[in-house]
Image (cartoon, rainbow, N blue to C red; front, side, top):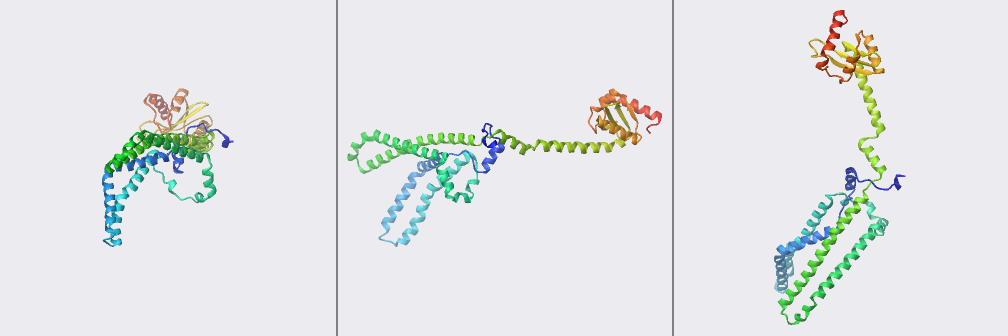
Length: 344
């Protein structure tokens, strides 16, 4: 029955935590890719001229040195420098992508782990032909279509400049080409970034929907977190029984037991120079009261019937001393018992 129950309950923090432990977090690959690309663009804007100059210098050096120097010498000189120029183009998008991934769903190690099931070709086919795979295919087709439309739109808008290209000098042609490419890249990037943000919102919605819980799951999690109500009830019952036994062991130390003849019994202990005031060491109602009185009789402890006082004392916690407003009533009983020799 729980398998067919509709998921209507909002996920609990524990549910989210379990999903994260399994590597399931709201994350848009499109947004990660776009921020990685943004990192490259930012680097080109800040240090692109220097990098391009370095690349052209190395190309010019290699081509100019091939007929004069040993090729091994040229390679040993040029390769490390070329790597140092190109490595930011690899590291920066990686750092931006990781940072974007962490911002979306936190740092998750689970997807990095190796699972043998990933090598199963049937699992791969299931992913491809699943609803999720179909959704990813639709996104790819949509992006390709949008990119194509944007490209042709920009080309169409730039056609009026083409007649002037034949009369341009080489530097002007290069500048025109770079400006055209930059315009295409900028427009495509802005549009694709907007699409990536929409994709993230969709992925977040899908994730929230996937971790919703059925009422049965919510009930089971509450049991797991707080404990089975039956077990908790049994534990409380055992605890009450142990507390009652400890309380009964204290009754023989009582100085007097005050009762409401048939229902309540409260055992008080008072030791001159030991306790500042009479203290409640046991109390009970019904059968517990009968047991307190039975133990009191067995140990020759005086039992005094005083309905109002018994009711007032019964409201006190075990181990607490009596309040000042009850001093007079209790003192009167203790004085009487001293006088008749029931207590010393």
